[in-house]
Image (cartoon, rainbow, N blue to C red; front, side):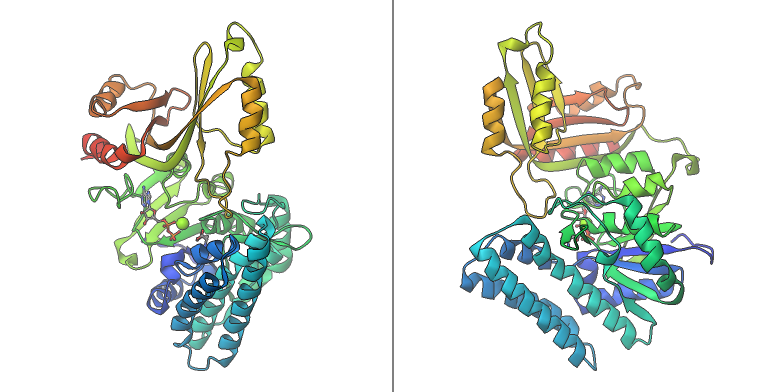
Length: 457
Ligand code: ADP
Ligand code: ASP
Ligand code: MG
């Protein structure tokens, strides 16, 4: 692993599997204690807990509620039992379970995005509390910190937008001085809006929290500890032949995250790029295996490869809009995108022909409340403008690389590999870093394996 100088200030984030149980927390604690430059630790909820809380927030009947709450309690009690003097900690966890129970009952009467965020925030509150107690048991001068004091967001519950300026000011006022004396343990994923209500940054948002805090506290590195030893040429779950990438540029890794490489939340690198903070990704179970360092391209001396990685994003929806009014007319695209903007929809891929527009939406999204983007109101508005066709069960495959638009023969190699698949849509040319295809969901894994074999093995 990269060594760092003494004045360095590292933020370390541990994902759900790295705090899933007592054993995993111990591995993560060893990593924290092995590096005195780690000043702030950002934690996800223990694995599985956020999913259970999201299910509760959708409103469940009393029996299912009880089952889910017992599962949550069992996961946290397994960790709790390793605290020798655990009465205070048990009282804290029990109180949280009472809160979860009351909020779940409220959700079964009426759901709301604000209620969902309040409910799911308890996952991170519990894991960070237990982690702090385990550190204290080891006589570490650690302090639990409620990140909602500093991580200010807007009030778009479920996928709140961080308010960078305020976060910086609040961190300077309430957090910086603590990090000089104590090891701060805090929560990823959650924040608060102006009036103090709890918000969340969207599923997988803890990576983003770590980067935001890293930026606000002038960190010299952000470490993302997860269940894989770095960023690979594709998801190692899809292709066991995926290879670890030791060094990668911000631009390449951002493209990967945007196009579905779940190892980093899509927005993670925004603060890192803005403030030029290197990001390390490694496995908390096997830190000795090293990992990937993501940084400014200036730091990479070797030539950047033509093909860097393949990313896959499932659950894509394709909208095909058809209107004869488009023929030799202007303003039609503007009207379509105006409707999309009013419905807070971000369009991913776009292709157009004389009287058709095809565009893709990420219906899986990362909203904590999992609301479907494709609402009846949106479809109604679009239908007033043109004929609308909706296709589901699609996946977006992106090849990430460098100077892709300049390489001769590149498309031949790619399309030859794909010749046995039907490609519903392809996008190429807007960026030199990617070439994307929309394919049937059922073909996605095989297609990625074939492409990986052809481009990387
Ligand atoms: P955490 O809970 O620690 O945030 P995640 O499950 O969100 O972990 O992200 C880690 C997972 O990302 C890995 O287990 C892996 O399956 C997946 N993944 C997808 N693409 C990649 C990639 N290119 N390199 C490494 N992991 C990837
Ligand atoms: N616990 C949240 C989730 O499961 C946030 C995170 O783990 O990053 O989405
Ligand atoms: Mg994650």
